[in-house]
Length: 370
Image 1 (tube, rainbow, N blue to C red):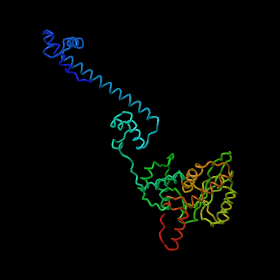
Image 2 (cartoon, one colour):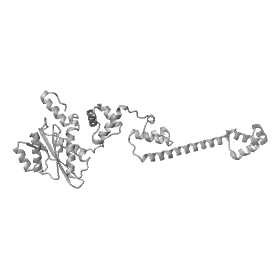
Image 3 (tube, rainbow, N blue to C red):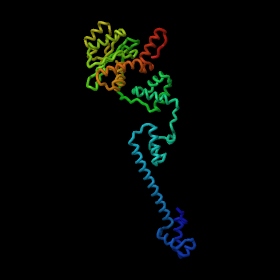
Image 4 (tube, rainbow, N blue to C red):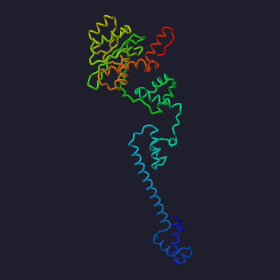
């Protein structure tokens, strides 16, 4: 577009001269035609220089407000599109910020709206090539054991020959976007006597309890869990539709035949555990039945903790077609619990590894971490 020869202020001054002098002289003096002066007079009328400046300011302000309104409408439209997707991680917010910039929003405004740093828009993750196999292995173990976090996965990687420090494992785990679903917290109670008779060696204190579930075909599951409090071993998980005191005695006899007698049997005050047949059997064999105080399950905390892991990692992760199917799956999980699963209370050893170390301590006097 050709640039105008005269500015609006100059045109107003020429029109003021035309009001005092003949138009022909004014046109000749400024090198314009008379029709141009008449055309300017129709356009600007009786406006003075000050009025013209104010008019231009109003026009500029109007243009600025229109631009702001258009930008705000664009922001609202883009944020509505982004709002349809769940944006949690920083990487997700950066991707949304790049999308907003592509739609026409300025970088500064897009980063402000999505609470990210502007420097992050140009940043690209430069994960070391050596970390990629670790991430792949972590994802594989996470899919296999959804309830395990970075600490236990690190133990599995160490067994595979990938030695990682805690901080590096946590960083790679978080960077890969892996996480364990949060569990609902429960109210905790304090007690002066949390767990009477603490075990100091294997086969000293056994704890047992029941866990209930159901199959897809409607069959009920009643699982008797029996553990060694010192080694954390799962000695037996008996699965049936109904388990009475007589069946509890049979299970204990079978385990005792394999491992020998314990000193103490810890349980709650359920009817199966205070039944006459079980109490008489324990007296005949010189076993001490230690029943926790009513309403204080934390006194049987080791077994309660095991039951929570059993439900979280096995029952909640599998869909049982029948009771027979449940028995097979539960036994596979029990062996995994004893032979493969790292235990934080055992310095991330398996119960089998811990027992082997404890026996070595008895022979050599070496200290076993606990």
